[in-house]
Length: 69
Image (cartoon, rainbow, N blue to C red):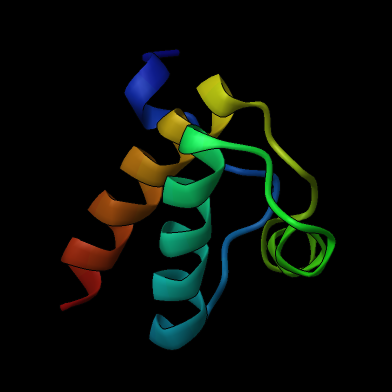
């Protein structure tokens, strides 16, 4: 599967949660998240990604968000 089209274990249904997940993934790509943000990301997507997974998931979710608008 193409690295940029790798979906996360679960996908948020609301646009607000989808946007929040994208934001958190962007932060995860740059650094470790604090405990609260990491738990929020796990709650939204099902697990805590490594930076490479975060980049792939972010691309996937951004495409998903675009198609919803």
